[in-house]
Image (cartoon, helix red, strand yellow):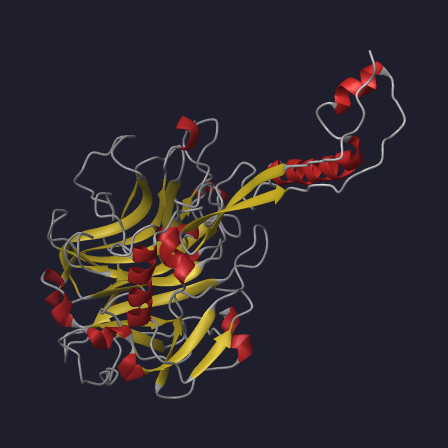
Length: 475
């Protein structure tokens, strides 16, 4: 039988369905089509039967075009290279499907948080720092503060006060300049920050279902919650402030939904729904900040993390008065294992004249204050103070997390290897800084993170704490 010849009509069709892109909450599909009809063609020489059979399906005049189009479509269908963090870790910014309605809500929330700036600086670590007039910061959206100005600093520090270590240019944004007098530096919140957190309503808040801070009256088990602590604490008296110095590290975080922090808690009320806390320290939290830098942070709550309070300046609460320190910005340098140690000093105390709780950082730099009216129990005094480390353990792959606390090394390794708190003191009823007489040390998972304390002339009350998380003794 005579072999089929190529026909005057040649058709090549290619369809490629590519990646789904995440862009402003829409699912966009890349689709490619190729379709061509040939003009009349002259007859071609006869071909062997086997070849003619192929050409009954693809007219040979346009076979090359069809093959080319199919090749392009094949390339479109190939899987994309894994995103950053996909090899063994979650990406820092998950591919959430965000609706336009939610994006509008996020936009309104950002407008409330990000106030008009007199000056803006791009930090080397990627942060944007806005210099905002002090009376226009988020705190003054509170009904009790609207139309007011920040309070004047207290006349005196607590008795027995000594300045901490001198810190200059300890935040990367300082390399770009400084904020003018009368303004405060605020880390700008971006759309991706809220998307990554997963909730507009809960953005900048701790989940209230988790046990934080440590409740010494509760018997903790492995399944008690996702937060694990190694802390020193005092209780059984009335406290009007606390002070300590702690070294700063960059602990490894296994999953972006976990964090590691070192901080001071000033606490009042019960560990039920009326818990009041004032908190300050440093933390590594990829979910909140989108990276793994240690950052200076503050927190407060008056109802056990349910509906009040937030990190940093992410709600109306803390009033910043300092134009050189950005709360939520990265800290640099950090401590090195078997190397130089970088520590910061923190003082929180209640101003006896106006009743507000003030925060000092480093060598006498007042950062700002928590107004007394924010609190119920802390409007008067604290009944407990804690210092130490905390991590979140989500039990990835059914095992204990490898998220590190502090330096990631156990307390027994000591100076230049383990994390520490030193010169730990409290403020008494007479507005005096006094040493601790009854510091207690506790760790709810000592095989994962532990703590060891001591006392010396130079360091006063101190302790080392921390650990690597998952290890042969902590599977």
